[in-house]
Every structure is written in C-alpha cells, then in structure tokens.
Image (tube, rainbow, N blue to C red; front, side, top):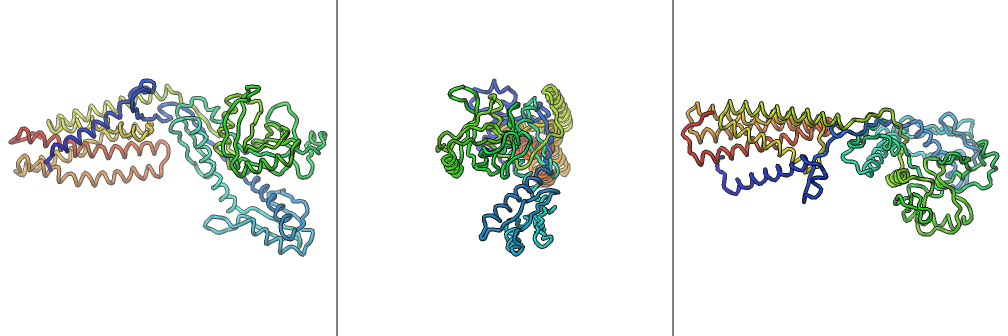
Length: 530
C-alpha cells in the first residue's frame, strides 16, 4: 500500500499539474486568453453571467386547427385522385370536425376504406385511432379528431419544436443555453450573456413556415379587398404594412421542407439585404419544373402566412436556388435565414413569461460564491491542521489541489457553472476531507492497538478505503439521479457534485497516501502524532 515507485509519483504529480493548469484560463478574460495555445474555459450560467429567460407556451388549438385543415386537403386529394374517383360535395370544418357528402351513396364503403387508409392509427400505447369516422344519414361522413390523437400530435410537435428552438439559439452563437420542456406544452429557455430578450423573442416567435404558391390572377380585386377569394384560393396579407392583401392558390408548389440552406446576403444591384435560399434535389427539380410551366405568371413567397414578395417568373429558374427580397434590414434578414435554416416550428409558441438577469447580479453572485468557498477552505484547513498535525497538513494540501482540479475538469468539459453549481462546489470542499478524517482516525486506532508506524498507516489506508468507496458510491448515485432527472440549476449542481466526488476521492486517498509514504520512506519515524 505504501510502495510508490518513481514512475507512479511522477504520473500523479503530472496529472494534477495538468488539471490545475487547465483551470488557469478561467481566471482571465477571453480577450486575455485569445492568443494562448489552449484556453479551456468554464462557462457561466444565466445567474452568473446575466442573460435572458423566456417561458414559451405552445398554441395547441392552432395545432388542432392545422391538423383539421391538413386532413381536409388529404381527403379531397384522396377522393379525387383515387381509382375510381369518388365525387364529394363541399367540405365543412366547422366545430372542429370535417364533414362532407358523397354524391353517390353507393360509394360509402369505398370512401370509408380510403378514409381508414389516410387517418391511420395513433402511435401511442393505447392503439386508439387518431380520427373517429362516422357515417350520418347514409351518405354524409363526419371525421372527428380523437383526444388520444391530438395528445400524440402535441407530444410529437413539442419534441420537434424543442429541437428547432435549440438549433435557432445555437445559430446565434450563444454559449450553453438551457432549453428544457416544462409540462406538456411549455418550453423554458435560458440564454446566458444575452441581455435583451427582444431579439430572442422575435427569432423564436417565427414559425418559419415557408411556402411558394402561385398568385390567382383571376381574382377580382374588389372581392379580394372584401376578403372573398375564388374557389381553390385564399387571401393572405403582405408582411409589408400598407400593401393590400393578395389572392393565392391554396396548393403549395414548394415548401420549406424541401429547403437545403438559407443565408443572409445582399442584392448585387441595390445592395439591399436579402435572403438567398437553396433547395434540395427534389425541391430544385420541382421548382425548375414549376417555373418552366408558369413563365410570365407571378408567384408568392410566403412566410408564416404572410406574403414577403410576389415576383413574376420571367424565365425558368433552373439553378435550384431563389432570392427573397422584402425590405429587410441585415438583422431581420439574418433572423429569417436562421429560422428557415433551422426548420419550421411544428407548433406556434407564445411568450408567457420573460425576465432579464443583469450582469451585475451575476457578479454579486460570483463574489458571494468566492467568499463562501474561501471561508469553507479556511475553516477546513484550520480544523484539519489543529486536529491531525502533519497528516492534517497533507489533507489540506489535497483540498487546495482538489479545488483547482475540479475547475480544470469543468474547463475541459466546457461545463457551465451556476449558482447551485457553486453550492455544490462549497459542499464538495466541506466533505472533501471526510476520507482523511476516516483514514486518520483508523491510523490512531491501529496505533492504540500497538501497531508500528508503517503497519498503522498501511492498515489505516487499506481498511478506510473500503468504507470511503462505499460512501461515495451512494453519494454518486444521488448525483447521477439528479443529473438524469433534473434540469437547469439542479443538473448544474449535480455536475459539480459528481466531478467533486471523483476528484476528492483521488486527492484525499491516493495523493495523501503518496505524500505520507514519501515522508515515512525519507524520515523513518518511530512514532507519529496524529
């Protein structure tokens, strides 16, 4: 147990020196460490660096309406394009239901089979259908969304939306945002270092639903002004204030799902900011075919049901790319490009709570945390030295090194330190000497039994190590549970706690045993005061 060859001593000192050195850049600003060969850094959380906090709530009613509209379009296409075609009357979506009449009552069974094919079965464990199909008055179908189907749709949409929100925030270049689900229809967003939440609200408020539709040139401007659209068309407002609404075909000729990239750029002639978009292979081929077939006709570029522009197709566009002009500023064009590039939100989000944490509050928190750490270290050092003398001095050296090792490991992992993380840090310091207390008391016990110095020290470390290991395993289990099930501040506390458990066991047991072994080998004491 006390045999430490030279290579092992060198390896331990080298490991601790490297980890301590990795903690140093975190004590300097990013400007000061910019030219350093390596500069791992601990990121500061929202409560330390300041930043923005948003609580977003999903509009589940809008999702329900969208599902009904989408199902209506599917029903129309399935009945019209199937073999044989099934003629139906106008489809109503009033009351949250889809209802339509068959022109030929003898086709009821065929129509039911087609409906069963497109409504599908819910993906939940209950196996319930997402849509309930009923036949009323022998020839009228009523299709109603089920609660199980809507719940599953909300869950899927929230999972997708959380990913999109994360992509959009990452594109801003912010560090270590916290994005977590809260309940069934809410998302908590915390972005350290972003002092103004307005930019974040504007970015996350965009659904970024991109659509290209042909303009209905047959629409009567008077009717359009009154909100009356021809059959198969819809009226949409312009995003630019002051422009009259416009009638566009309901059929989407190309959508954002076929987008490969979107970048903010500048118009070569006017030098005005715009957004350049590139389609994937499927979208590029479709866009080329549509523009070839509709040369001379206008088409509308629509984002979130608002027309950005409606240019004419002067010639076929064969390059698989297009440009969106709409009186953008550089910021608004960049935000739209980020939103389009990250994908559309599967469900609309609205901000129900927002707050800004000032950087000055973060500095106060850091100052208070540093004082707490310093007081904790000072009291622990004084207690250990007065109680155990030389062995307490070794334990104190292990505690000080452990502080820098924890910071070094956090820096390597690019971890985020929060106020609860500082609490975990202080707790780790306070408990870091528990192992040395157990070891020293066991050495005392062995000396009282008449063991020699070497035997007492060797048995003290050997017998106490088992207890130390078991105690820290149970401690670590609690930390892992908090890390897996917790979020935000709880997870930050768990990360620091788990790192502290691992590093404190190494420094308190292996490192101090090495120091004691080297001292005994060099001085060969006949007795020890402990």
